[in-house]
Image 1 (spheres, helix red, strand yellow):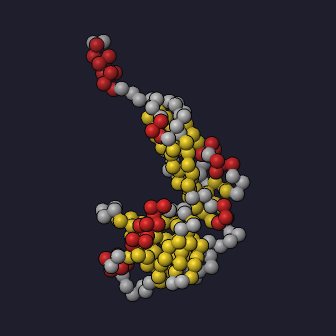
Image 2 (cartoon, helix red, strand yellow):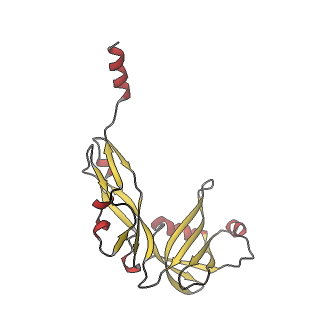
Image 3 (cartoon, rainbow, N blue to C red):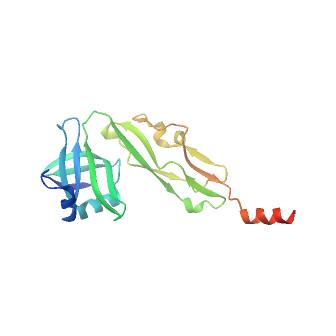
Length: 193
């Protein structure tokens, strides 16, 4: 499990100023926390963490020397600068189900050569105990052909008794459709005139 260091931050200092000084702001909230705990994280540490973890990942957050088992709930980016600005965390409580998401990563997509592979769903929403959290779902699509589809019900997470899926079981995750050559169709239409 990844660990990230953070410090409690004073609300007297504006988030914009902290970002200019090389920090990412955030909040920790949870059932056993009154309100929330405003924090600041060294930007380089946050970026390093986000290379391997993302929304729905369980990590250990060290706030001023106190370790907290948390879930990354939200990551906000500045789309103009391409930089992370804020990360929100939910403190986990043992024995209490939490709402989370698992990212879907496609494996062997380059082997699909008979059509166009389209990933329709990029994450699955679910509820589970902290001990049963699923960070990502790896889906091998290398054997898919034109007309094939994989639905949420086909994923391993759908049969996991420790996970309550919130995403519709009939939702399509990935499909392969035929390539339509519009240039050839236009030539055929012109030849018929």
